[in-house]
Length: 211
View 1 (cartoon, rainbow, N blue to C red):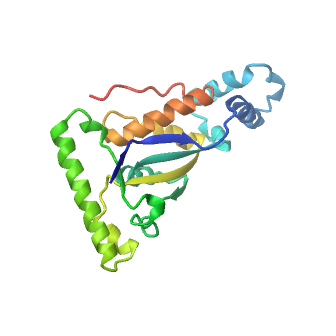
View 2 (cartoon, rainbow, N blue to C red; view 1 turned 135 degrees about the vertical axis):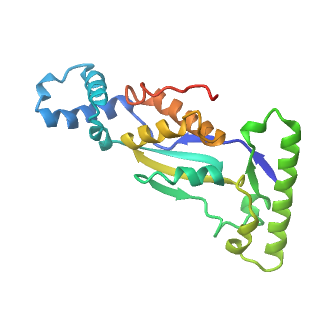
View 3 (tube, one colour; view 1 turned 120 degrees about the horizontal axis):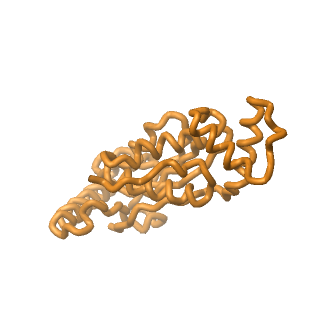
């Protein structure tokens, strides 16, 4: 059994300044105000449309992100309707085979990182799940049948594409203090990465400490 941490990878080669320049060009079509375009006008324009709630303009651009997380978190991610998903499949992936190191990978629960007792109980239950999964495979079960004993902590990879408006919606819901700790962990990581790549779009979305 392999224990891993959650991870977020931006799959696109994002040129944030070019992205908002194109958004400005699209948005100014609504007002036929193209003559007001100048150096630095894109940032100002996008701030104004976000403040006014005219967020349909930012649907013209998208970003693809790879989440490495547990299965439980992935179930929350796919509840977002306006998106495209490609996910590691437990129906077809046989974790007893060499490409997976003949072991399952599980994501360490971030909320127990300082609790040795809870982590020990969790680790033992993961080992048992792995043991019975392999026993089922060895007994003739195929992966889609044997997966019934795999835990929510099983590591998965899910590639997610959303337009920028939907990413804003995603972050507002998933970084909220009441969100599941591991959902919040990857959502905050993704938000910080996109804030660093794309000007203005996510500046008003703040991360508050979980209570």
